[in-house]
Image 1 (cartoon, rainbow, N blue to C red):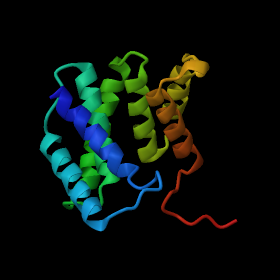
Image 2: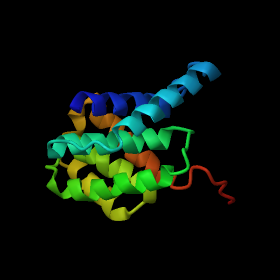
Image 3: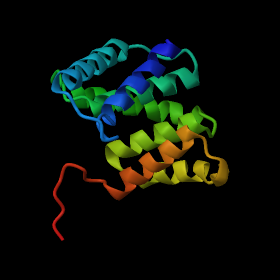
Image 4: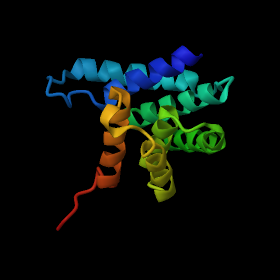
Length: 158
């Protein structure tokens, strides 16, 4: 199960960042990737991790998958809320780690509760800024992007 949730996160994250590197976006690839991510999320939705870390990885993968996909079977928001509820159960049990920062960040990205960003920053502040891994640097940037753009689908008039 752990590899399924990790691959869901990787696939969903790829969809979420598809084309951002300047490479062309092909409609057929985009549609196929969307379908694959959504179907895998629905398959894993009712499963639970056997450890705290597995449950956190599964919640993370599901949150990213639902955020990235354009599909909705009519209950997508209910699914997201259920995953957020599961995340609230697992977050206090997770030790400070990259996984916890990722889960805090994507929960924050759903409803912008400042306490989530604050906790993520507290963990990030313990990391050696001069020697961040690629994954640590990515999540630091993603958290910053969420904080700077809380309304990505609304036009802000100045």
